Length: 261
Image 1 (tube, one colour):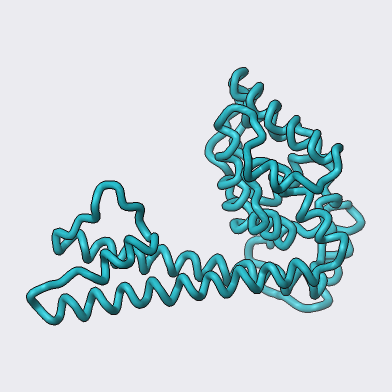
Image 2: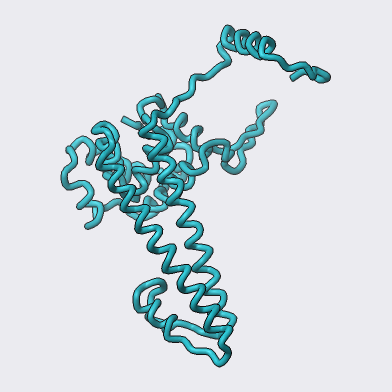
C-alpha cells in the first residue's frame, strides 16, 4: 500500500492481482480437499486436548508440591500405580481433599479424552484414500515418526510431492533460519517461524530422535516390517546422513539438502 492510499475497492484489488500475476509475483497454493481438512481438524483437536492434559497435570503436581507430597523415588509419573498413590493421600482439612479429587478427576477425564481422539484418528486413517495411507505408512519407516506423527505431517502438508526441494518444505514449516544480510555480510538468526506452527512442532519433535547413533530398534523394526525395501533404504540413509552431518558440524545446512525421493 502506498502512503496515503486509503481507497480499497474490488476493482482496484482485481487490477493489483492482475499486475502481480503478469509480473510472476503470485505463488500458487495447495487447497486441501474435504478428506485432508477433516484429518487436520481431528489432529488439531487432539493436540488441543494434549495441551489441556499438560496443564491439568501441572496443576495437580503443583498442588502436591505445595502440600509436601513427594512420590516414591522408583515410581513413574502418570501410571496406574501413581494414580493409586495420589488417590490414597489424606489431609487433615476437607478442602484439600476436595481439591485433590477435582484435580485428579480432571487428569483422568483428559486421559480418556485423548484415548477417544486416538481411536478416532486410527479409524480415520483406515478409511482414508489408499494414496494417503501409503504415505503415512512410508513416513513411519523414519526414525522418530510414529503413526500419529506421520498422520499429522500428511494432514498439515497434504501432498509431499508438490515440494521440489526439502528447502521448500522447511520454508512451509518456518523451520529455516532468519536472515539479515547486506553488503556482503551474512547474518543468520533463529528460525523464522513464518509457517505452519503445527507442522514445525511435530517435525522438531521427530528430529530429536536423530541425536543418537543410527540403528533399527524393536519399535522401528516393527513399523518397517511390511514396507518395501526402497522405503527402508531411504529411512536408513536418513539416519546415516544425520550422523555424518552432526560429525561435520553442518547439520542445519546439510539436512535441508537431503533428497526427498
